[in-house]
Image (cartoon, rainbow, N blue to C red):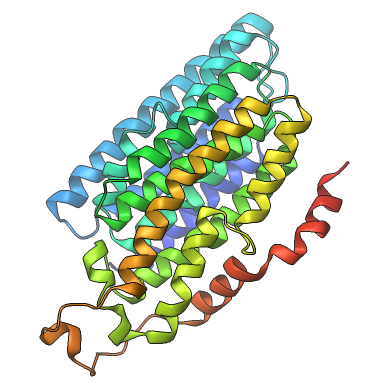
Length: 348
């Protein structure tokens, strides 16, 4: 892709998100979301592969549907209450419709079906943007409207953690596994949203760091299936021995970074007398943990077949910069000791 066009598209991505962040009026927020969608579409279809074009079309249709729902709900809210302000969502009907529209935008279950399909058709770099950056603007809006209907949030959160766990169990494609992992993590964030928005933000940030690290590892190994991971020993032995730690951090095992948000969320749910919800969420985390363990097993505990590609010691060195990978991996593994600081910041 022409670097000038690429720069314009990335600028459009950044600008769309920034406009949504800065807006207090629903039309402006909607405009930012639309800019975001339109800027990523050429990036998604840049390889002109049938799978990429199909994924782009699916993405466009779901995002357009969500944006139309958002616009309809904000007009309904203005009609019912005379307010266009995001903070002034007083009527339950538009609030619920907007919550569902934003859930569709980020891919929460039960409106998640587009996410694994779309991610599977993209290359890892654009997949990374879709899994991280594209979640920011809708999340900013969800945090601002502070949905009053607690039942719908808990249902969305629990179905997302369960479907994110179940869906990834039988997959062999890494991008689909990462999509289901994304659905499960978003479910955790939505569960605790009404009780502690700052904890939701903390979870979102740790999820970004861990996902960034995982995508960069797969990109360095040029791996898109579980089988392709088995040959990573010959390419990057040290990174291969660290990757299970990143994956287990995504699964939420102590003493890794990913344990911190899950621990704090379960604690918060227990404080709110939602012991059953917390139990179901914790059990669903076991499902996710199984497929992270499966990836770790394929990478580090199996020998790749003794064929030419598995044994060649020479490899064309990757042109990927390793500094972002090193920083994000260190953060994905080592940040748990900062949990007391995080809790101190989170308590108002």
